[in-house]
Length: 220
Image (cartoon, rainbow, N blue to C red):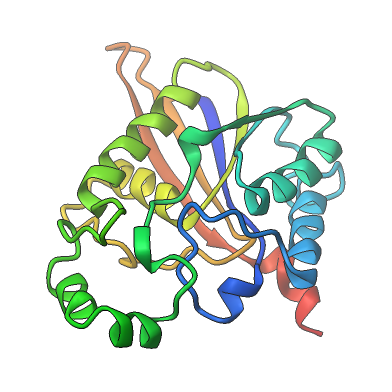
């Protein structure tokens, strides 16, 4: 088998709502100071001297929400390619939960948290989306954006939800519930498409999950 294309999946940098553990969803929240530093650090990882320096990035595609777009702009600048944005890579809508913490949701909407915990795939906050509907559409979107790009390396900058949906599908896990594995702010996961020369079949393989070593300098 020969490698056909590589996709680098980047989660946006930190926001104040991440720090305060508030549901963000489709609310447009910008990066905070740490998030901007994370965006710069992940961009350096794609520079000529960075850990992904030999990637030969041809495309950078991002959610159009500010926190993802700001992160992607840094990467696109370093890679020397134009930035493409799309609303199709947005986070899951959490409806009336957005802007609230877990404690505030429990106080304002009794029963919602219990329903969420016991019905992770099907529960839908009022005005929002269920994980099942969102994850199916998100995984399909990522496949459509990066499929058929033989020999190209693409960076996709998005949110924990769509990245987890795509990764879960690639790994073939039955348990695709939100939060099944960690996708940190500013992290990079790598997925490679393989071509079987004998059959012509193509399939995706996760080769790295939640890389954060490029962010370690920010801890000092």
